[in-house]
Amino acid sequence: MKSLCLSVLCLLMAPVAVAQTPIRSDAIAPGALWPDDKGVHINAHGGGILQHDGVYYWFGEHKIAGDAGNRAHVGVHVYSSRNLTDWKDEGVALKVVDDPMSDIVRGSVIERPKVIYNAKTRKFVMWFHLELKGLGYKAARSAVAVADTVTGPYRYTGSFRPNAGVWPVNLPDRDKDPARTVVARDFETGQMARDMTLFVDDDGAAYHLYASEENHTLHISRLTDDYLRPAGDYARMLPMGDDEAPAIFKRKGRYYLITSGLTGWAPNPAKSYVADHIFGPWTALGNPVRGTPEQQAVTFGGQSTFVLPYGDGHIFMGDIWRPKDAIDGRYLWLPIEWENDKPVIRWYDTWNLKTLETPQ
Image (cartoon, rainbow, N blue to C red; front, side):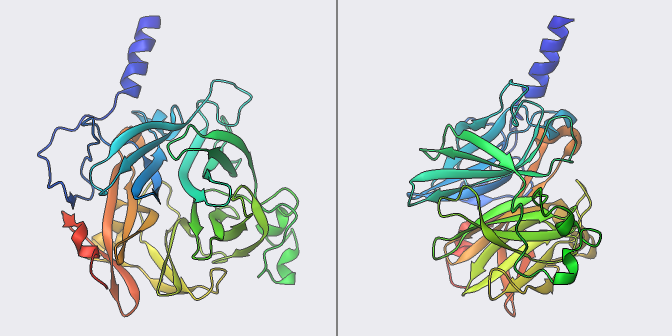
């Protein structure tokens, strides 16, 4: 029985080898297997990218095979690149542990890790959505880890529900009744925080965006100067809008947001928004996907995770989830184009980064 268990474990841990005709080294093929420098499909799901000292670092969830891969068995993986197409495996930046008393024990849920650099403290700060082992998605916590070097190792500092004892800056008094709203119900214990991202503005202020209030309302929370905790002021972005998977970016002084709806692992129509101030108000711009009705209905089979500035443009990053075989999840990278100051996303079997090197 022991040898059988070991064989099963080896199967679960096995990487997805890439056996396909290589694409051009300067091209991106959405949804295709994407080999790293070892010829193995990149394992950085729900991820985000940090550019530091001329190098791009891609952090994401390390998955294993089967539906067991929907929980954390390894940790957060990191890759590096100078051109966004060729990626070097830099190893596991944050490892799960075997201590059953730890938040990040093997079998917990670690999702959507994002890393930002704090120039004042000279620390690299990672945030992620954490669910405690054995509790399903009831914990809804934010977690933080810190490192001295970009690839780690990252030191886990703890988890919490953000903004305990603080009201959103834009919450009407009538909604401060716990019998009326989830945000009021969770006032003392802190707000639920699931799908998330981080954003550093032009002035160095950092923000944490997360799906809250039973996933029905996004919050955006300013972070302390060291980027380690909420600073005490936050806003409800889209009250009862049923948005998750937030991906935020800035263009010509305005803030843009791409999200998904609430259908679990199944893809759904994307949404987009714009605001003149990061705390809003936010104006709906509709579905940014252009294509067939079928493509628009499922966002090309993917879900937003991050928007990466590149050249004079931006790259939409999404995940094509494979929950029954998590390690085989694919990456949906497409250029963001514009129609009347609205972001739009079109399908390309392959596309070249030079597309974004001219003003849009």
